[in-house]
Image (cartoon, rainbow, N blue to C red; front, side, top):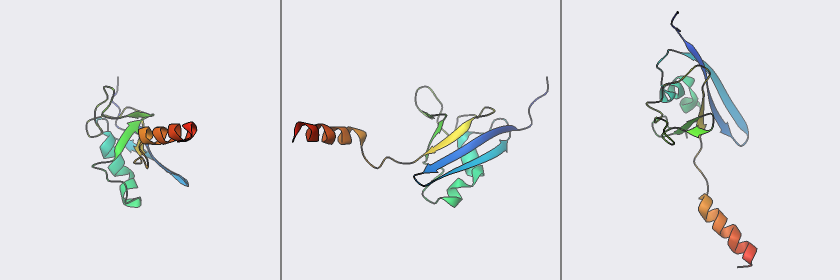
Length: 105
């Protein structure tokens, strides 16, 4: 069996008005964080800090549910690295406000 010299992955960053998708060929053993750096997205979007950005693979946040953190997660062929934007509102607080409004309070 021959070893793969490169694997194809994608890095995506979505904003309300646009989506940036970068396809990369990376060496086996490349981490999600390294792919983010190679994508150029942090240079293109200054609000994305490669050291602190929350990343996920196909909707699963890295560093949760048994997945390695972004700086340790080794990419697999076809992986899609997603860069998550910070939440603008706390979901629990938003639900509480909606419940109060529904009660008439």
